[in-house]
Length: 118
Image (tube, rainbow, N blue to C red; front, top):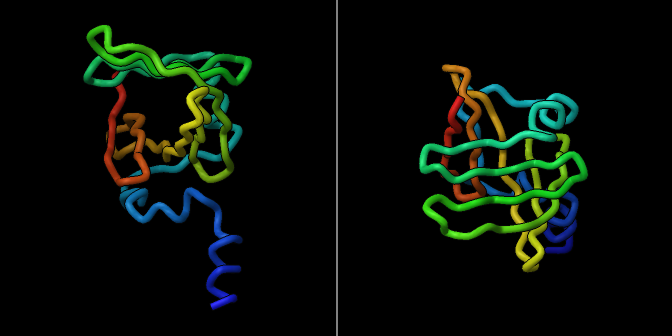
C-alpha cells in the first residue's frame, strides 16, 4: 500500500487524468514551443469563447454570449500541458496538441476535445 501511495505522489498530476490521452495522429508540444505559441495570444473556440494568455502569466477565459470572464495565472508545463490557477481557487491542467489537420486542440482532464479556430 505504501508503494502505491508513493507512486501516486511521484506521478505528475496531468498524467493522472486518464481521459487526457492524445490520439495517435496528435502532435505534442515541448515546453518552449507551446510557450512561444500561446504567450501574448488569444485562442478563440468554435463556441466563441476565448482564452487569453498574457505575457506576464495572467490568463482570462471569456465565455461566449456575455457569459462572464474567469481570471487566473497560467504555467506552461513540460508535457504539452498548461495549468491554470484561477483566482477563485479552482485549478485545471489541459493538454494542448495539434491534430492531423494542423488545428490546435485543447484536451481537458475528462478527455473532451476543444478545437480552436484558425
